[in-house]
Image (cartoon, rainbow, N blue to C red; front, side):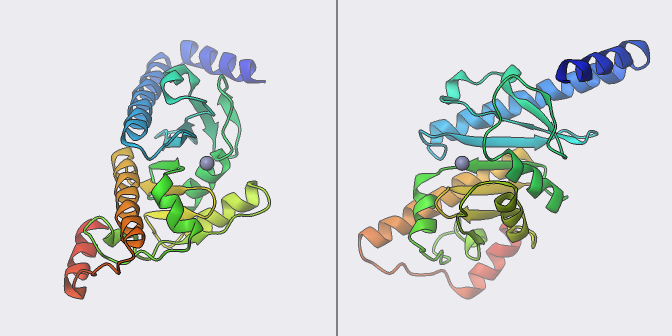
Length: 234
Ligand SMILES: [Zn+2]
């Protein structure tokens, strides 16, 4: 099936639209480079951790997304490994194995037309916020966009129902969600924003976890400052 899809695409491109096919290939390559660079950046910065995660982007002008596959180590990922998946879940170019989170990425894109990129990670400190049910008060500039984050409880299986639950909790425009027992997911109008939100949420979590370790109640920002920052940062 997969080979057949490619053959039809190639034939149509060569006969009728050579430039369109080339443009799509170039777009895929450009997006793939951006995703691998972000994946690498997140791994070096810490949030992806040892158990990795997944990064995706919409492929503009198509009904598909480009998403990282299941990989044991970030440094092993190449552009050719990325999966092109349609909104209905059909994998157009399959080399790597899809990760468990692909369905979640698709459901979020369906729910949120404003989202162009998604990062899912098992960021350790942010994961603690979810499993220990810690609140996120506005204690730093980084924390302000995340004070009302939705929290998605774990289900018996991470199937389509769980993916729909995650997307439903993000429906009101939230920048991220805490996936209890399963890390976090951040969204963005572009990949840079989704990555930046992952880094900022993990940084916020580190600060809050340190406060708890010190058994200190952190001082919150003044309400007026929070309102101004919310408008500037969200
Ligand atoms: Zn995961």
